[in-house]
Image 1 (cartoon, rainbow, N blue to C red):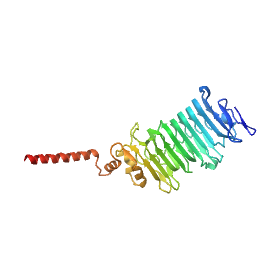
Image 2 (image 1 turned 180 degrees about the vertical axis):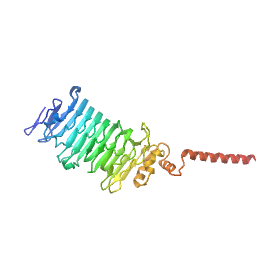
Image 3 (image 1 turned 60 degrees about the vertical axis):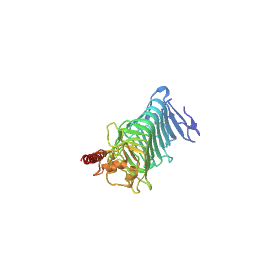
Image 4 (image 1 turned 135 degrees about the vertical axis):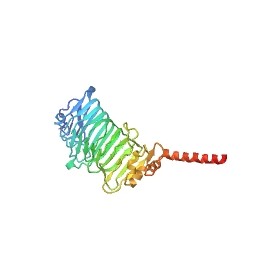
Length: 348
């Protein structure tokens, strides 16, 4: 269905009867596509080539089948303000499918919400604004099982990146997400990344605030080594997480470099509370390695061991420390020896 605004025809390209076009703001339009009667939906450069720069919104929703977005499907749209994918059974974003070069001065928002199976192919989401400086870009992915999130799948000059209520079915590899150099707020909330984990440098770019809240996380060595904290008051939130306990192949909770964050100037301020982990010596490698910093102490104060306290665990893992089992054995031996001496003295 094609409407019009101020005498302009609503552009439809060759999208077909699964999509409709309607006015958004005066002189602009938005397109919404659904999957009628369980039919699959494929978006390609051929189906969108007739769309004009007056299209500011593109939405795909309510598909109990598969949606496939092919390479360069939106190359002709330079003024998008919003794009969303919602309530979809299978969503496949192929390489360069969202390769957007945007010249609209307004903020751009990409939302992926409620997707049963999500596939992000290599270089699938590439977001660049005017002269590469699109500071308003926000990306939100929530309520999905992430079957595949390939290396370089998300890149751009992002202002905000949010992962919420996600289950990751595979290892999140090095170089998967690059938020650019403008300064981005990054958050993982209620996510399960426990079975395979976050690899070294999975996230890169300049970050003003990093938030990890209510997650089950497996962090591999140097997981956040690609992050540089920037701004006048860079901050880090670590609250109510389970670290490394449920990884199928085992592995330490806080391996070497696990929470190491590069800085460009101001020190990172941490807000941390109630983070559960195993407290073997291998699990505490990041805390034990040099340098000892205020940031580490802030994180350390939030850690809850499954057996004993974090201070006891740190003490026994430092050179010369005594394990609880050997300490208990030493105490028991001393007690028995003293009792035996008293008995012998009484008999004599």
